[in-house]
Structure formats: C-alpha cells, structure tokens
Length: 201
Image (cartoon, rainbow, N blue to C red; front, side):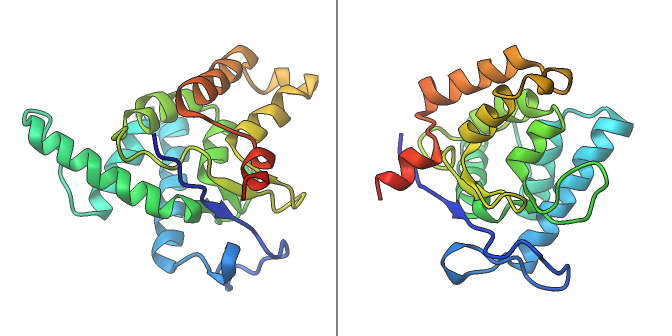
C-alpha cells in the first residue's frame, strides 16, 4: 500500500479566526476546506448529541454532497467508482481537514482525525469509513499534524500514545479500544510515529 506523508504544520499558534490557517510549505488552508472541515465537525457534534446518526455515515454523506456525487450500492462498478473518487479527494485534502470553529468542548484548531478520537467516535469513523476507502488508493494513514498547544508534530499513532501514557485518561477514553485501533493501524496500515517518518526524509 502506498503511503503519502501529508504534513500539516501550524506555523503560528496564536491564530486569528480571520486569517487562513497556515500549513507546512507556505500554503494555507483553503476557504473551501475550512468550510468543509467545520461543516463535518459541526455535523459530528449534532450526530453525537442530537440525531444519533452513525458518524462514518455523516462524513461520507457530507463529502459525497460536496463532490456532487451519489452512492449506488446496487451497482458494483458505480460503488467502486465512488469509493475511488472519494478516496482520492480524502488523500488530496486530509492535510487541510482541520476544525477551526472555536469550541468550549474541544481543542481548536484541531485535525479532524484527532477530533473524532476526542469525541469517542474513532471506531465508527476508522472502521466504518477510513478503513472502507479504496485500499488501492488509500495513502493518508500517516498524516502528520502539529498540536497548536504544544507545537509537537505527531501522527494518529503519536496521539493515541499520548492518551495511553496518561493514566488519568482512563476516565475519558476506553483504553482497550484505543489499543485495538493502534494495533490495526500499525499491523494492517503501516501506521508510524512522526519521528519515524520525519527521520526517513
């Protein structure tokens, strides 16, 4: 499986809501991706607190609507085509999938895949959406982002480790599920820590 290292570095951590979020390499989060990321983050909150809708379904429906695509599960060719297009869009933009809307309950800015872990939606999102994307095109597992609070670079593996190493987090997270997710990411998707990836560049 091909792995593309997508790096999201928050160059400054005192970020004005009016300024585009700066990304590694001199780029900035586009308005399109800012709006889409915040839409997904908002709809995930609604799904968890109000509607009870599966979070993986929420993300997929939002992305398909954004791409003006429909999902036809009765047509195998159509289903494969929609998964490939969806995966390519996800790979191309995962570095910009950052929630920036201020929140009293969650860190902001925060990468979407870290947000779903903090919302305890990681098993739904990973097992029902991320791991269901087109495996031949799936390149985003080792995306790196910086914590705007600490400035530390990290992948999802690093983020999970940071949670597991703090015993007080046992009241916030289900540790055995976090360990299961980490194991799948490493064993089946070649998940790595940021230090391993950066050291190879």
